[in-house]
Length: 420
Image 1 (cartoon, rainbow, N blue to C red):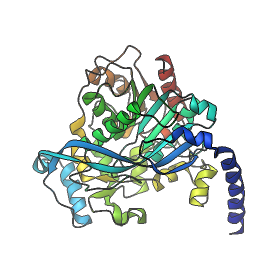
Image 2: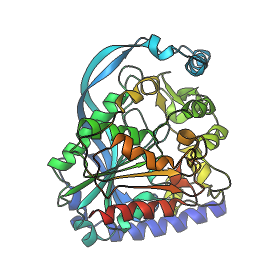
Image 3: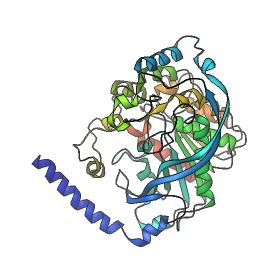
Image 4: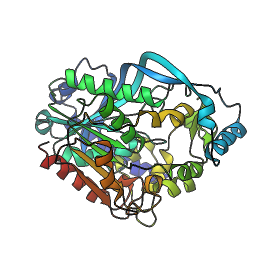
């Protein structure tokens, strides 16, 4: 206990010093705006290399969801049966449950974080913002896992701003009806609303001129949906953890072994039974990781230790701790927003882990490079500067593997070569 208190005292002294340096009014004025943040937290990224302004925003959106003829599961037995029927041979579950259009509209509280270079002068000169959309059963923590495992820090170090957020029904964002509300179409419209407000307004003195959509897995699907319906929202896009085939997605869903979230962890207490999460760390490794190409001995930054007041843990364990929710509504409707985007003419970069199980069955080079197949199929009119990349040895969660830096370098070079 004494050693833990000593560690905490050391961390606290570093933190206090850092906030004396960071908490100047001029830098805070960078984001004083009417964007809608409440109770902004002015601090640093989990990785420790970026200045981040974090809080809730109210996002108003309208979407044409799909009526789902299914009620809240009464118990775990019903959830497991749903999974069995959805994965069985020649399953007609979706056909039986999906009804007609279901228009919805509302305002929802979305947790978000705008991160900029830690140097105030560099922050003030940022012109390009990357809008980061995470995947299913993950949250915005995917972009900022730990020291040296932070895509956000890698981006701000290179002069970009990032805007990450917890998708509706995830993390610290609002959790409405998991069947009729939290669906693919609403996810699309919320991202569009966020981009529109970034384009039409600004954060205090920060006025962006270039807007890059960056997605991972289901977040790439949502980003694709926006480029199809609103092709002028993004100047360029980076799609990670996605391909042109969904053959192996059921294999991953089986490994997830969905469990009622409220029964799985105290952090999900009170959520309706239509919110699910992955049952075990084994299933997370099976679908998201490729052993031994991730470091079980990696330590989080002292910022994460400060927040959790916990012993150092491996990056894999952090991912397990940070697992989040999915919903019946999203599982049944996310695919409905995917379609070719002939109207999008910006450059497209597609990045896959070489051993992504979810979208490649564990080998993204068979029958050909799966990262190279996305742009011709979905973006026939993309700019000539489009690119693709397979991260060596990485599984689905690229940001948690050894080759993450190689993948990030490729992504930043893609942006640089296209003038962003």
